[in-house]
Length: 265
Image (cartoon, rainbow, N blue to C red; front, side):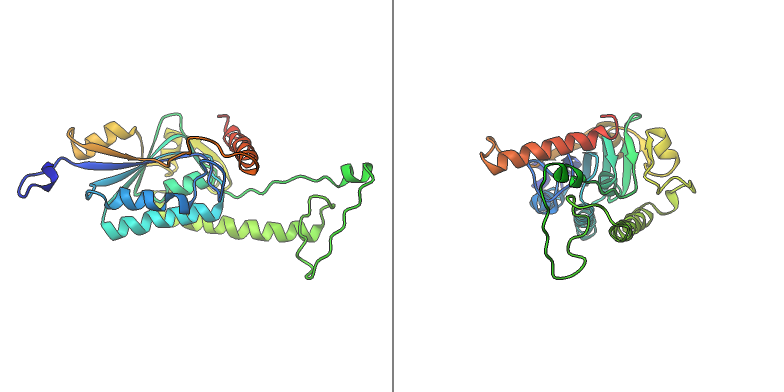
């Protein structure tokens, strides 16, 4: 109530948005721009917060969704004049670091994993298995590039070259984003954009983070002991839906676990 009484100084308020999980278009709990839109609107605009804090625990995912979410954070921060602080938990890697670098300042635990500024494409090849089973793959296209990297056909040098060009363009976008956000804070480290990761203090030394610290003490140091927190999180369904959605969620869960496992988590 005090915030609405004229001439009475209000206690500082920080909106806390939790960003947990992989970044992608679908799947239960996946982080994406559509699902986070209203959450960020409330976090930045409700009750005129003094800051927005991002709790990040993500191994990455979709480059496009990472860019969309990061751009939304910056757009709202600029429109409202509200500073943004990122606090990394276990990991902010790849797309997870894209989200962290959308903040004005980044803090991490001494054991947090940050970085992995690169792009990865993975798949499988099943053409030998099909041949052994006597199964013939039939594909008809209008346009020679419509069947690139078909997992049921052998890879071609042309397909690999095209994929490398695409990955290179995505990697350049990622590098440009990090450089535009971190600027002179970045060290002249040759491994910075190779997909390498850093932990805690080492991430601070190369400029991927501003310090080692946790949300509560850092925010109290910045805004005082009377600072209050409003939490905003994505709502998960009470019950899983059946059929295809259950299968999709199970696969998404396996993929998310595999993404975290790449960093030993």
